[in-house]
Length: 590
Image 1 (cartoon, rainbow, N blue to C red):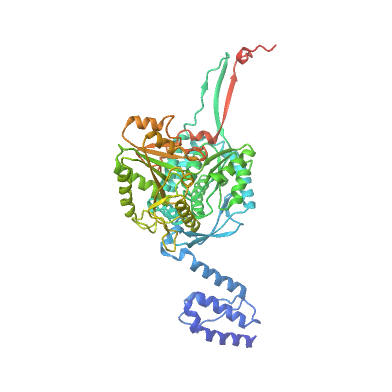
Image 2: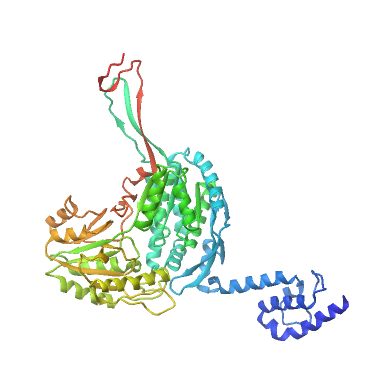
């Protein structure tokens, strides 16, 4: 043993100059080497480091540990140094409960995760921000069992009391508005004003839902039978599943969850796989409100995970309504799966939105609107303007002004002030942009500006304007990027036909001052989309109206108006308070 200790002492002297300068990695490396050099030395053994006066006091209580453990510590230290949290500009993430490694499932009041570990990245440079351990099917089942029990309690809480809980959620969001908005911008890639605006949208939904909680009204219906009363009752469904997409990683949750909660439903949320930090941060705020009010934490259950979690939600008979936001292709599969078990489905799918500019339009107003509608969120909104239809009399004027403002678009880090165009969300998105441009060219499209990628570490592309025929196949599809198709028309009738010619039916807008054009546009022979605007962009909808579209957009309606009815079960109730049994339609039975 003495010989081994001498061997250790000699080894430490050799290493002290070259290794300890790189503390803490040098420390870990030195421990590991020393443990290897002294295999007969049984840990833990105290080690005096008085020969290293340049080390901090905590250094002198060091104990030698087995090599495998030391190697693990060394790897962990390396990993932490590689994570984004070593960057000063990411420190704000700790203010919303995030760390360099995060558990991705909130199940029955506990954070856990037994699925794969993924890295979430900043689209502006494709560098890691943090790691998240996703959920497994086992985590999902545990969460659903707890959620089913919580639903029995939550649906019995009076609606105005449920509204007060949602009010508190809104207050919690207000207290972290800037941090959450910055996180959305960092992880999704949209510019900071849009990130903050997205969180504000949830706060607005909370305010809307609080008022709604006192207005979940039924109806009194006159009965044709004497001493009878008919009425409608609205009751909770039980559990609502919400599957959201990367482009609005928390706002779409707000559209659904705020309404679902005041309607008496528990919520099971699967966030987008590429924005897990938003999912975790949002859930922590909601969980804090539930805990403060001594309510079952399983009222709100969330999962970070991939397709298997989404498939489980679609198949689960315990989930009465599934709200899905994503592509038309995937949405169709979700709808088919939910329909097979006779569940309810609310779909918010692809858009292929058009703006029509008539020859009497306020052109500067139209150009500003098109810029925001086509370039905002790097063309990754479902309500992005993808087709610009311009009357032939003003076509060149509109295109020239649009080309001028496109030259002024600042492209760069979405967190930097003044940036108007951030990156696409993933490298795959950038590749799809490149493929899309090639298809556009092959089908006769003429690139007026843009059309290329920007060489950088991030997923940046040029905002693009393409002159093209409205009849080619590529125009009928949704390219999720800042690509705007421009085309001429002669009459309003022709413009409406072009607007309605695509499979999708989400949003549309017309720029005109003539009442006859406006009312034709919004009438039965006008636009066939769910959102029909006049003199404003196709995007940027307010929460007070019902949001959603027709055709391949899915037919769902979320947020305002009477969208709440989709989150409840309607019962028609007939009450006989007399002593006779008159039958409807005058039937005499015996």
